[in-house]
Image (cartoon, rainbow, N blue to C red; front, side, top):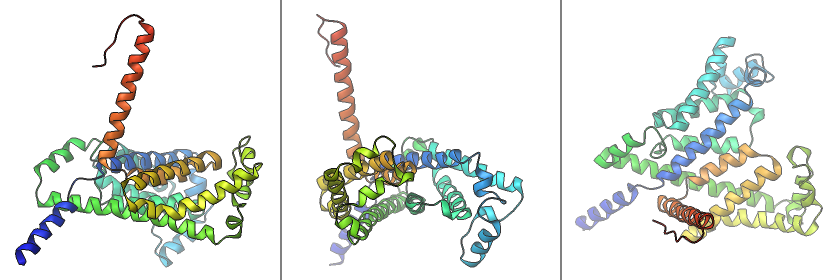
Amino acid sequence: MLGKLNTRWHEVVELASRERWLIGASLFRIVAGLTILHLYLANYYQRHYLFGPDGVWPFARSLAEARGAGAFSLYVLGRAPLYFEVVFHLGMLFTALWVVGFRTRLMSLLTYVWLWSLHQRNPVLLDGGDNVIRIALLYGIFAELGACFSLDADRLRARRERGGDLQRIKMMTHNAAIVACAVQVCLIYGMAGLYKVQGELWQNGTALYYISRVGEFTWPGHSELLYRSVTLVTALTYVTVAFQLSFPFLFVLNRHTRRLSLAGGFLFHAGIAVMMGLGTFAAFVISVELALISDAEYRAIGAFARRRLLSFETASLSRLLPGRRLRAK
């Protein structure tokens, strides 16, 4: 009996410590990091007005919230303009180092702390994407985000090849972090769908009409094509609710429905980015969804892309050099 339990335990440990989702986790780091850098750079010339000690959000209020509600922020530890400049630019530096994968685990922690501090300094600028990335970044501290496409990649690969108990523990925490991200994404879609289904405008199919008429969330010259079509507005409204409600079930059912749910998520948020102008919100959610694609699936996508590129190059050369038979190597 004890022998069987011991065997089962080793099987569970082996399964939990297997290398998974390394490519997706690295793509999450790159896409999320570039989006955070975009936020820093887009607000760079307005940084004093938005986040500075004499900015639009009162410094005294941020300080009171930090003391009363525990809303920690590095920006309230000093009021000197030079201190603000140092903290702000360090945030940009740490995020850039995180993107290129230098000391990735440490930079994951520092990027999280600095982004949290920036959000707490001016909370009125937050949207749903900021909430998503803060949660994902917290999980990402425990994940192997530098396994691919990073300056740390060779060092981390050598460490994985050496193996050992410590490496198995790291892979277990990495896998647990990705699973936590998957649960979070399922909760986001599921709760959004449950919230929508209770609304009258979503029930009668007119919600997207009113959304597309909001001036801050329109694409001039194109949003009109949406809200002028009753059939299209109604269909997309119901499809949105149905997709969000079904996402958690599709994601866990099997690998085929999981791929379908993630593809739908990419298209859904790409549409939000284009039609509503919520680019950073969409990029943050897509970055987390990229982490949920397996390494085998990424390799299959890469092999397919290489075959298509080779076929295109061969066909192009055939047209340029008629009469010669070209063979792909």
